Amino acid sequence: MWEQNWGHTKAQIELFTADAPFVAYKKKDKPKPGDPGYKSDPEKIQRDYEKWLERKKKRKVNLNSFLGNGDKQNDNNNKKE
Image 1 (cartoon, rainbow, N blue to C red):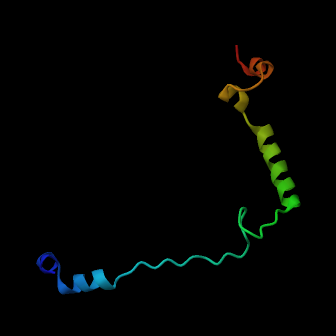
Image 2 (tube, rainbow, N blue to C red):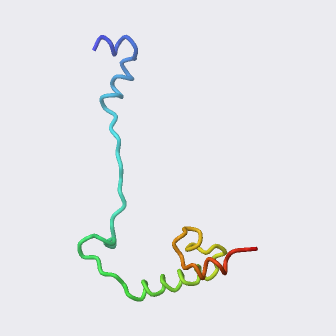
Image 3 (tube, one colour):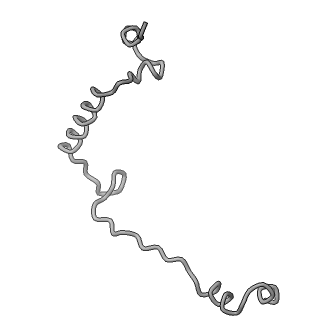
């Protein structure tokens, strides 16, 4: 205790002992994937898949050629000469 009194005031020491962090988590309304009781919604999955297909069509970069694991035919079509 002497070391603390040397560098800190009594008020600071009281705060050290009394202060505790408090975290308030939001209530979980719906179970997340992987939680027990989770049921997937096939309609939502289909909508998400269709959104992904639309984004894939708009891409300017072919990920297969970028990663080097794509078809050789696609790679030749995407190369600029």
